[in-house]
Length: 198
Image (cartoon, rainbow, N blue to C red):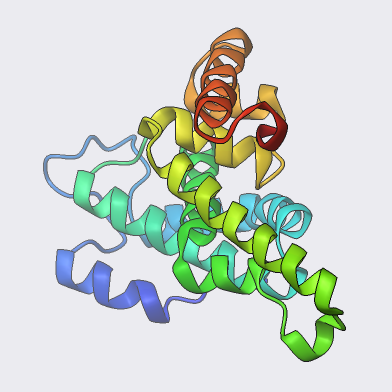
């Protein structure tokens, strides 16, 4: 697997960043196409495995590419490489997953089933409508959470990240992640009632 520069070429050309460091960048820092290519070669397989676990395997390669495009753009905007590119890249990957989960088309695809595939009877149709209504209410309630709490909740409950993985990516302790998850569940219980929250 090699990096596709088609999406990155315009960004690097527009910024004037090439193979060498800009004048204000220290000589020892990795910056530019070679560094990005080296990072891709060392991390693409790990990201591909991560995305394969949490998404449709057919989309995993595209998500790896999107992660590197975002990483390149963020690095260009900052005009410097992060201190720990691997950790920063993982955080970008988590953001890509979160954004993918937030997109309206993706949510619609996750929560809808064509009626002809469902094979519902009349009693099941009512249950399906109630379930759809509940999902819409839960989504609206989750959007009311503070951004950090919402992101932690989505990473845990929708994308399946462990509490330790979330703690590592956010820089919080596992206990702090647990507090955010507790707040999210309390928020859901308050708005839905005890029987619907879990």
